[in-house]
Image (cartoon, rainbow, N blue to C red; front, side, top):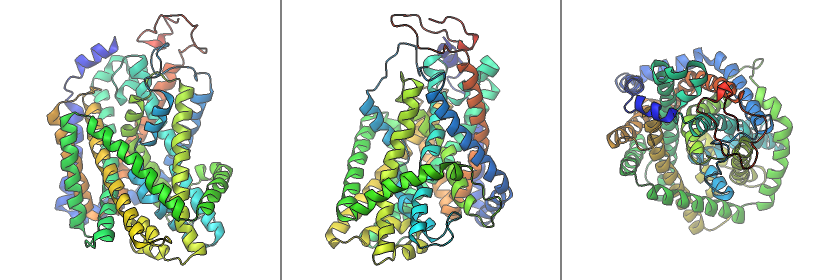
Length: 527
C-alpha cells in the first residue's frame, strides 16, 4: 500500500520545511528591517505582474469552475473519494453544516458589507454610481467574488487530496496528485517543492485572513468600548489570538475547536436573524431572489472579464485579489473539506461543495449588504462615507444605522465582535494544523513542537505584514504568493485527470467486494 511506503519516506521531511521557513524568514526580515522599502518593492512587483495576473487568474478560475462542474456531471461522477464500497463518513446534514464553516467566515464578515458599498459607488458594469442599478450590480459582483467560482477552487483541491489519499492510499498532501506523472519521485525533491509551495501560499492566505480579522476586531473594540483603534491594538489582538491558537493546536484536543465552531454557527444565526428582524426584511429577500437571477444571467461575462480595454485598476483591486486569496487559501480549506468528505461520490461532493456554501453566502451578503444598500437608497445614508473613511468599519456602521434601540445595537455589535474573534481563533488554529499536516507528508498528528512553531510563526508573519503596511501589503502579498501555487493547481488537475482516465465509467455491481489496486492508472483490478 502506498500509504505505508509514503509514511516511511515522509516521517520527517526536511526540505519542504526548510524551503518554507527560509522563504517566510526572508519575508519577515525584509518587512522588519526595510519596512517602507519592502512595501514599495511588493507594490512594484505586483504592478509589474499585474497584466499577467489579470488574464491568468481569470482564465485559470474559469477553467477550474468548468472542470469541477464536469467532474460532477460527466463520466466520472460515480467515482468515490475512497474505495468503491465505502460509505460517507458523515451523514448529509452534518456534512453540509461543516461545509458552511469551511473557512470564509472572517472574510465574509469583513467584505459582505464593504464590498457592495464600494461597488455601489462605481464599477465597470454600470455607467453611474449611487443608483438602484449600481446597487443591483454591486450585489451581483459580491456574489461573483464569493460564489461558485471561488468554491470551485476549493473543490478541485479537495478532490485531489481526497481522491489520491482515500482511494489510492497516498499521503494527504499536494504531492500525491503528481504520482501519475513521476511515480515514487513524489517522495523526493519535486514532491517536497510542491508541498512547500502549498505551505507558502497557505501561510500568506492565512496571514491575510488574520490581518483582516485583527483590523475588524480592533474596530469593534473601538465601536463598543471607545478603545482608540491603532496598530498596537491590532498587534495586541494578533498576539492574544496566536497564544490561544498555539495552546489549542499543541494540545491536540479537538473538543475545544468543535465547541468554538458550534458557537460560531449559533452566533452567525443570531446576527443574521437580528438583521432580518430589525432590518428591511422584504427588501433583503427581494434582493436575494432578484440578484441570484442577475448573477446567473451575467456569470459568463463576469467570469471572463479582464478589463483589457478599460483604464484603472478595478480588476486588480477586486477580482485578481479575490482569486489570489482563494487560490492561496485553497490548500487549507481543501484539506479540511477532504477530511470530512471521505466516501462521497464526485457528483455528491461537487454539488454539495458548490451549491450549499454558495447559497448560504448569497443569503449572508443579501442580508448584510442589503441592509447597508437600503439605508443608502431609501434611508438616511452615511454608510458610504463611513466605509470610505475606514473599510473595516462597514459592519458596525450598518448596525449603527439600523432602526432600533441603542441597547440592541450594542448587543449586535458585541455578538459581531465575538463572532469575528472566534472565527479568527479557529482559522489560526486550523491553519497551523494544516500547514503541519502538509509538511509532515499527510500525518494527521504532527509533532507538537512543529505545531507550536507554525502557530507562532503565522502570528508573527501577520503582525509583521501589518506593521509593514497593513491591508494593502497583505493584499499584495497574498496575490503574489498564490502565483506559484496556481501552477501547482494546474499540475494537480492534470494528475487527477490522468488517474481518472483509468476509472470505470459505471459504478461497480452491488455485492462486488474487491477494492481497486493502489495504482489505478494501470487500469487493472476492476471489480
